[in-house]
Image (cartoon, rainbow, N blue to C red):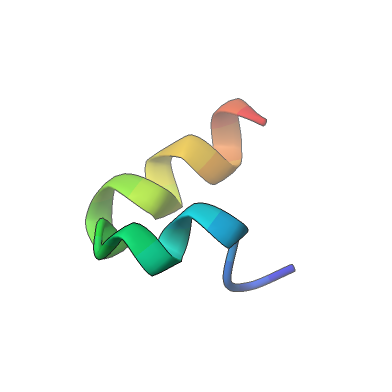
Length: 22
């Protein structure tokens, strides 16, 4: 999954960091 669901919030940079947390 390259683009997480929370990417819709507009947090591209933050989304990538969260992806590692998940």
